[in-house]
Image 1 (spheres, rainbow, N blue to C red):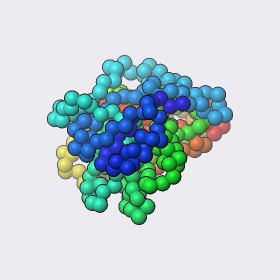
Image 2: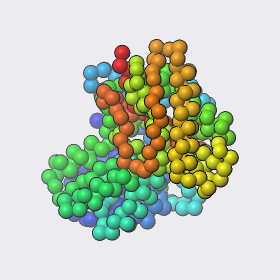
Image 3: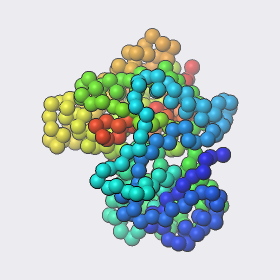
Image 4: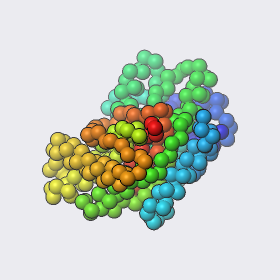
Length: 336
């Protein structure tokens, strides 16, 4: 059973709030917030090791055990300082908000909805907080369009109470039932990313968190995807916010971030992950996990879905680089 979860309701009506309070266990905190409160007080706090175990079917290995194995592997890879909450100095808040799930009520203004969803997702700083959009059936297409801006799912209300409860609680569970945590494969990709940022861009990446993702959707403004085939099948993705992506590429190209065109940014990030993939592949060439890497794919925007062969889990490592978040996602399985 999952740990006690905190739900943040942003702009939700009293009827929806009352319904949810009646459906969820009494111990689950529910906070009704305005958009302004979320913008000022939503904070990042690493969640590793706080989620209780959920059995992985067919393997006898729990998700918590896998998380601990990945965390131990990462802890041995670099002596980074322990994670600490990150808050903007410009928006101090006496009572930081640290929810496990956010439900946002769709308004009648599409532009405001897009702005709000983007703000909430950015304030999460790559932490995997499910963002569900509450909508009427008539506005469902408009609500679904917000997935490309950072939302995870839509919730139609009014609806069957049990269906609502199931949808809200299932958003908290990590995806993937198979548990191939292949540290020998994951670690070289993590190390190659950190090394490249340091040697080519002069940027230090500090590890902040490790967790199992609750869904397969990518987060971030720009995602560089490496596909793996052979004895290991899956994908490794490096996710950037645009500001950091521009900073990295500009440093490598000896240019200014604001001078980069979209094509130059895409080409630069593609080359970055191409080098990461090449270095990681070379490190694995003498192991039993040899594999091939396809040409990197660079996508802009949110809402894209990570390939997940064999219903594999998605492991996320979050770094802080020059005060900005960067995430490396790994979803893979052994094919033979």
